[in-house]
Image 1 (tube, helix red, strand yellow):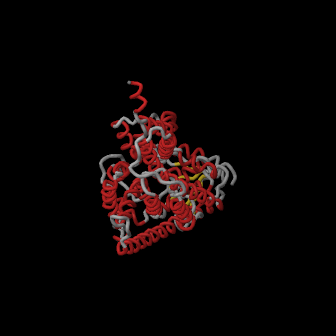
Image 2 (cartoon, helix red, strand yellow):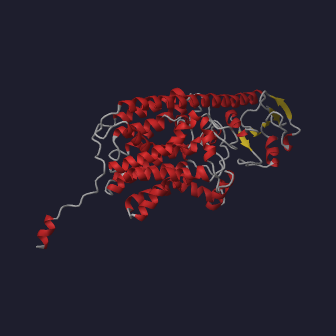
Image 3 (cartoon, rainbow, N blue to C red):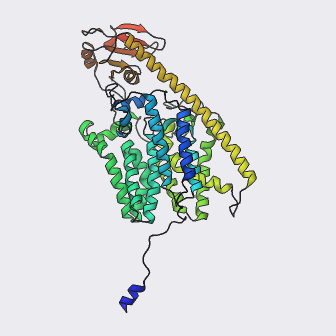
Length: 492
C-alpha cells in the first residue's frame, strides 16, 4: 500500500515563475536597443575625447605608455583588468572607447536578458531604453570607470538570483549570480555589498542556500584581490577601509540628496557642491523617478509579480544610500547602479499606463508619453553634449601641457608634480608624485633626489606659489598654469 501511494504521488517540480517564460526568439527588441545604445555611445561620446583623471589611474596600471599612477585605497583593480586587452598594447584612446562601447552594449543586453520570464520582453526593452538614454549612462559606459559595470552587474545579479530562487536546479542562473557578483566586487567591493544587501538578507531569512552561496562565492572571488592587497600594501583591511573613508571626506551622516540634484546638469564631480540648482527641465526626471518606481510596484502587485519588482527596488535603495546619505559630495555616476535597478519597475509602470485593462492602447496617453519622452531625451542629449565638450576641452588642455613639457625637454623617464600632475604626467608619459592630498606618495626630499637624475617638472595654477622644493627651479609660463623645471644632472 505504501509503495502504491509512493508511485501515485505527483513529482515535485520547481516553483513556477509568476510570469510565463519568454519563448525563444523574443530577444529581438532588447538586442536592437542594446545595439542602438552602443551606436549612441560611439556617436555622442567622441572616442577621441581623451582620458579623464581617474581613467589615467586605471589605465596606467596596465599600459606601457606611462608608469603606473598612485593607486589610492578606495580603488579596485577591476577596471584595469577590463581595459587590459586593449590598453596593454595600444595607447589609442579611440580604440579603447570603441572596445568599451561594444562591451557596454553587450553587458546591458545580457544583464536585462537575465530577467526573461520575470518581465515581458517589452518591459525589458523599455528598461534598456530608459537606462541607456540617460546622459550619465551614455557618458560613462565607454569610459574606463567602474560605476557602469557595478550597475549592469547589480542588474544581472538580481535577475539571476530570482531565477535561482524560483528554480534552485537552474545552474545557469546560479552561475550568473556568481559571475555578476564577482564583476561588481572586482570593480568596487564596497558598492557590491551595498547593492546586494537585500539579496543576502532574503537568502538568509528564507533559507535559499544555493543562490545565497553563489552570491557569497561571487562576492568573495571578486573581492579577494582587493582584500589581499589591503594586507600587502595598505596595512590591513580595516586600515584600507579607514583610509578610503578619509579620502572621501569621512563617511558619516551627510545629506547629499541636494548635491546629487545639483550635479545633474553635467558636473562630473560636485565637491564642494556650492553651485546653483539646474533648470527644472534637467531635474524633472530625477524627481519623478521615485514616484514612477512606486507606481511600478503597484502594477507588479496587481500583475502577480511582486517579488521581481520589490527586489530590484530594494537593491536600488541600498545601492543609493551611501551616496545620498553617507558622503559629503556628489557625482552623477555614483547612482548608476540605482538607475539600472529602477529601470525595470519604471518601465513596467509606464507601459501599464499606456494600455487599458485588456491590453488595449490608450491613444491620448500614448501621444502624451511619446512627447514627454522626446522632451526628456532632448534634455538628456543637450546635457550630454555640453558635458562632452567641456570634458574634451579639459583633456586637450592636459595634452597641450604634456606637449609643452616635451618641448622643454621633459621626456620619459620623467617626473611631474603639483597641480593636476597625475593626469598630465600620464599624457606626457611621466611618473607623478604628490607630497599631500589623496594621492600623496612621496616626500619633498624624495622628489628632490629624483630631480637630480630625471627631468622633473612642478606645476602650479595661475597665481599659485610653487612648493618649497621647487622655489629655485626655472619657471615657464603657460596660459593656464606655470611650469617649474628642476636642474638635472642628466642632459635633456
